[in-house]
Amino acid sequence: MFRRRRPAPDAIDQDLWTDTRRALPWLASLDPGRDARLRTLTALFLQRKAITPVGGLQLDPHQRTLLAAACCLPLLEFGEQGLHGWSQLIVYPDAFRVQRSHVDAAGVLHEWDDELIGEAWDAGPVILSWADVQSDCANPREGFCVAAHEIAHKLDVLDGVLDGTPPLPRAWQREWVRDFQQAFDALVAQVDRGEPTAIDPYAAEAPEEFFAVVTEYHFSDPATLRAAMPAVAAQLVRFYGPSPFADTPL
Figure 1: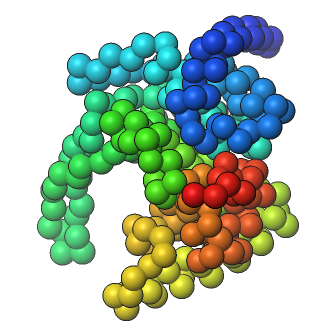
Figure 2: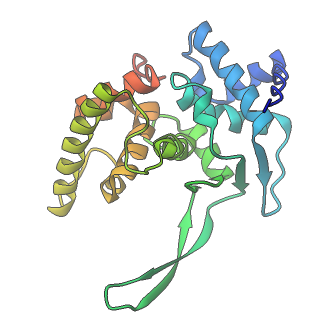
């Protein structure tokens, strides 16, 4: 059986790309080669993903391109295979509520509402709060980058298991698991003791959240991550490439 080859996406207009680079502070330090790769990935994203604003939100072409570029930044080294397995980006105007449920060991059903700024379903869409994407752009060095967090989850699950380890060559995977597990265990112990932590304690929730949170720090506060977890920071530089703020003063 023959499959028709998907047409190449339209190139992003130079003026539009220049505006996107100005709006996303993480792009300023990209060398020409990485900038060209990101521009190509962003065009692929715009071709392959439906960007669906909800809740009365409207997005113009500049805003859609910004969202696509923010989602593609973590894929610069991994490549376009990081776009596989999902087809839609849903964008809320602000934080959104989702209903949760859990049956405990006694068989009692518990239900509650969570307020979220982002979510990534295993085999479904990525969901982002537009207000929080804008906040991240306005304050790019504060340890938060919701788009990077959710794309980390999408990379994580590409091997079929959401466990904090994206698809890697076997030898690298062993090193990754060793370094991440040691850092995760140490963070969980700190949180359990009630001690302050250098990074967001939400990272201690589960290995997959640890990977997503340290991804945010790689892009937005690499100095804090490097000081607190040097082995993890080094793994992320290898996986994502250099942090946008690795060598720039505050």
